[in-house]
Length: 529
Image 1 (cartoon, rainbow, N blue to C red):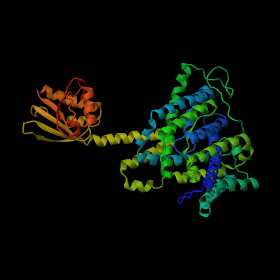
Image 2: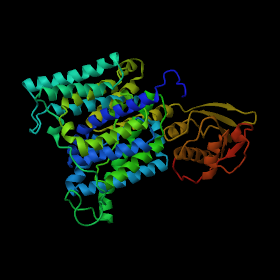
Image 3: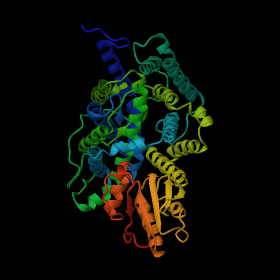
Image 4: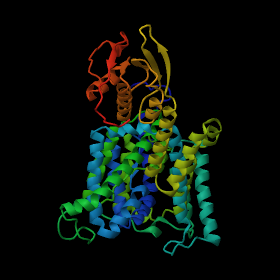
């Protein structure tokens, strides 16, 4: 028998930890999936089937073992308008197309762009998510089957007491033993108390029945009625025109949330996951889900946190969670429906505490004002809108600030050669943000017959930079003077050669061995400068 490394968990212990972690996640998935189905205005089983299928496929093929996927609120709020206007079969068709788009994103390696998310955006995302999870649990403090009334008096006190007891067990048990996941123990202790003493508090069954059969394969396109009695989506361009915008938005939201979850789990486990692999797995899961009557889904940060903190590090935990969820639907619904919502709320409150980046306040004291602003902005937008919009807003604002800072870095030192040519040594990147500043560095009327622009400390980045160079060359041409370029890097040389701005194909200057001069051709960008 091979000897274990220090700190390595025995195989049997690992199996037990993974399965128990999966059971904990499955129990917490039930009310989440049902609640998100209500948000999307579909049958509860549509959310549960999505949690099972998406969770199973991504657990097996996903890019990050330990991540949990299923039906999410971020997707549900987009789906509701489609379901209200066209019916649930159009939703299934949209989920199929959503999956295809996500697979394409994985094939073309679009997931790598998640690296462009700055740390300040990640902080805001995590904190906003923690607040969103907290606010989502408050709905469990309303009267079951009522009209939005909040619990009051003794029922509210019992609910709060059981939530507190669950949190106390989760906090205290790891100090005594790690034999079973603390969240599972918290659920079990509170459930036993409620069932044995018949405590009158809301239970899972008060939300909806989770009893059902194995999900059935069906094609959402065609004529006639679907599995829920609504018309199928006709297979034509009109249907594509309806569902494509929803599919595109859902695909983007799903991938952004999944890839950010992947990054977060990577940081917690000190491991790396494959972004492109995760995109393909999410896409395959949603494509299959659409054909089996599920509402689609993506990675769930809250459930992933439960899994990781319960010890789930391998694919087995996610697979076990999906299979446990299916067994609840098929066989154990009467028992699961007796679990008090207070226990599940307590688990999620502990997730909130563990998810929120409490070091944000310390980071803000030493960070720049702009980074603090971005963190707060992303947090607020996450709470008011959704996660995907918040991340996009944060990345755009950060990119604009980066462009503004770099635009102000353009400068030039000048000197005159023994031959009488004036040399401008440009420092800083030349791109759309600095193009105007670049043009202001030159004095065509006062300069000599030959002007050389030295790019040893600069880079030509985009079309605006090319236009600025041509515009400056044209000004010198109008004065009867020449503008040459020197010390172009390989990428800059290739860019200008491709556009025809320079015609000298010397190969030594890009390596900074010989200071070759490149005359500039004009006429490519017209009068644009």
